[in-house]
Image 1 (cartoon, rainbow, N blue to C red):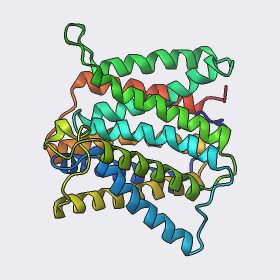
Image 2 (tube, rainbow, N blue to C red):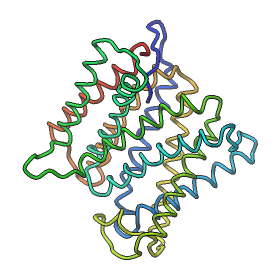
Image 3 (cartoon, rainbow, N blue to C red):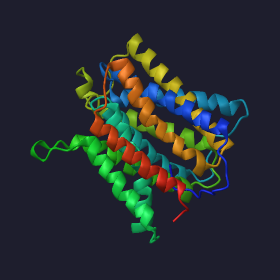
Length: 303
């Protein structure tokens, strides 16, 4: 979700668009299954088991000769994975306690942070339209989270922190990891999540139930239901990520990136279908502003 160069004479590949949309629909569904894990499991256990399952699948792909897991620059992949995994750690932790629409909207502020980092730390200049997009995106974020000054809960800002870390990881992908394969970067990402999960499982108590304590407990008893839902979530996540990779292989990145915002629709739609959660009109307006800002940023010429 980093800013790319958009050429006006390019036409989006229909197959690329379909892959991205299917990927977003699949990821939106898989994210809605997190509450099944949050009831009796833990955030750290979830990432440890999910990361291990994903690494096993990626290892099998490598054994079949379809790529390599070995990085060319281990420390570059490590640094990139640290930020991306940290983003997802916060993201999934928030899914257990906040409406999924708010969490996804916060994550999708990442293109705005990419642009801000380029301006503040890399000394790059942006035009008035992109500057307006930054203001629009943050206004949308405030509409989604609607912080109450009289009873301010900092938890609602955590999805935006996830968006910031995701942005840093996106910049690191381009700046540090040029030439690394998709398989290598995926393996680094899931390995880092598994490490984070293992640390949490070792340090936190193995007590408690309920979504409120999802991030506050460590290793929990492994039940058949817990294994089933983690396996389902991991399988759907791999399918969704495969569709994303395939979409970017078939189309120009700057052209297909805008279709990722379909996740805002699918995540909220699945939440309504599975859980009866409805997005308020104000939050929907905020999501629309975030999507508009992101589309402007990723579709304009690079800064």
